[in-house]
Image 1 (cartoon, rainbow, N blue to C red):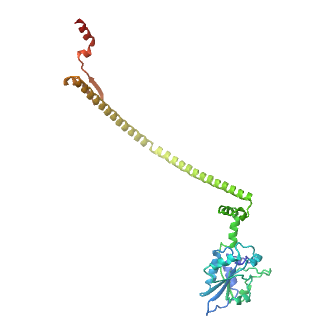
Image 2 (cartoon, rainbow, N blue to C red):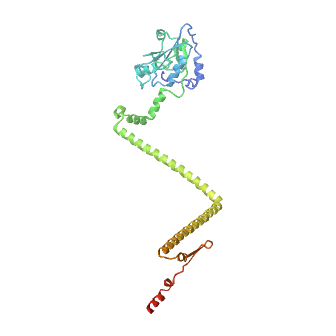
Length: 334
């Protein structure tokens, strides 16, 4: 695309004002297109950092007529650097970018900055397509580059795409220059290739680490804050639930406690009974082994009162076991 105008224009000619642009183009008559062959439309520009804004303008030019052959002229580095400034891409790269645009039928390298009749005749151009904004020519007198083709009725207006331009892209890179330097350093480029001093490289790396640390601290603080809010809400909710349900919860706890105690008491009682039965069985076996009658075995009587949960033992011993001293006296008398 040609450079931005270098002189003041009315508000109706601003980029976003399409009505003004349409009115301005309507001031110039346009010759009728040929009907026996494709209409040859020419569009020119710098096309540095080729983007979708360029592609859309070329699409409009291609669709200007039902049968269009689109020629695109691109200025070389020498003339571009002289009248507009340094480009990011070389002329060869810009030419090649245009060749890969599907709307372009032919690329014309070394295109002139100002279009004249000789150039139109050489390429058999019917119309020149561009937006309606005036662009300064090489005279320095603030003349419009496209004034000639507008005057002879061979100008076809296209619309600019809002929000995208080569200058905008370069501005984004300049704005975030440090980040792009670090990005390319990480990808293997040397600081010399990027034109960065040793001190600047180290400073950029340290600043990135500090920024990463700050982001992690901020993220952690946000998570802690969220957890605190959750705890506050939960505490408030639990407090309200306790106030409303305290009596019911306490009663339920006591009921469960009483039931648990009853089960525990029953288990203890059953365990005691089992042990006593086992003891009784062992005592009976011992007596049988010592020649006691079955009657002596039954002499150990065991009583268990289930209601009072008390145990009684009534044991009957022979006189020898009950009164050992009287047995010794009798033996002495003998």
